[in-house]
Length: 441
Image 1 (cartoon, rainbow, N blue to C red):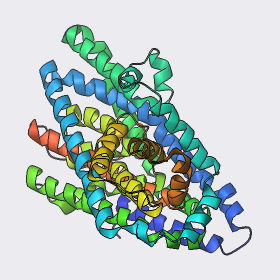
Image 2: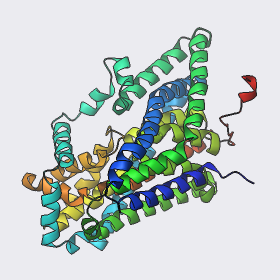
Image 3: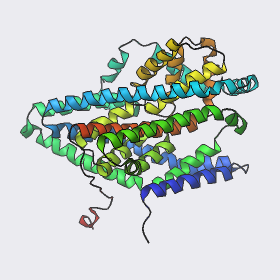
Image 4: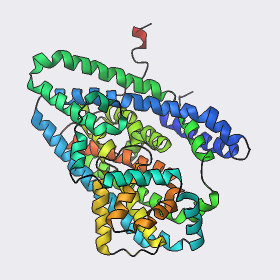
């Protein structure tokens, strides 16, 4: 009997998790059982992925830079990467704004629903925490994001996944310095990082063996902790608008992959599906990064020189799905609360969402923090910000899961484009977790 491929195993785990979660919601003790005995398995899986994210970035990026032999090649990769990420983010926000202006989901929200959502969520810990974090970011200077990129303690930066840009900065600095001291002097350190890279990628393979069971646990936990079904139904038109925009963005990626790299877009989706399914389950680009790198390098054929830079940077600054969601959410909130937006306001949304995505943490819920910054930029009344967030808080988690899929797919797409443009898109070389098992028996 032919073994099921990984993406099918993960998909089956997700479906079973959703069904199991719905069954558990029907019994009084179901939610506590899932929370205490099932969800921890998913939490451990996510922690394992986050555990290896920083070592993988360091080892992979140092290896990628040291293999270049020429700093000018790295400059070319870097400039193309940032430029393409900016373009895809602008495309995503534009798609969101066009859709929300056509569908106008906020016009269908009754005053009773607004009042109920406000009462339920406006003073919740989740909303107030997002407001506080956004105000902290808004109070910083215009060049603060550059200051935040430079660590004053490399080990401290490596201990916090939200400081990924600092780790990337230090690693690039280290890799370039290795090039400048010459190949002979850098060889011992290069050999160490090459070996570390192989070990961490093997850790990814081992962790992925538990992926189907982990996504079962994660999805069951999401279902039993879901909000009032009536509130979710009231926000269905808004949620459908966001999801439709995200699907259009996926189609855009597939057109780009097909047109620029000449690869079959459905083949691309198949190779990326394990990373996409994990992105959906974890709602975190950072947690999914090790799997994204493994799929792009081994299953798509992007050279490590490209993927080691493009993907970690993308996980931090390229949030196409999140930026699209912000465009839709900002206009939806304005429509629902009767705040008129001019064309200038909507152009401000494009610019602010683009800038807010740079340096934003690649963790669940970062999109709502960015949304507060966007709303402030268009002059939304400060006393209604909490009400605005309360309107969308009920469906934020499932939409966060969907937009993370788009974020990860966008990172993979850009890595293929950059690799193709610099002649670094080759044949896939798949490695399995048991490739060297006979050597240790």
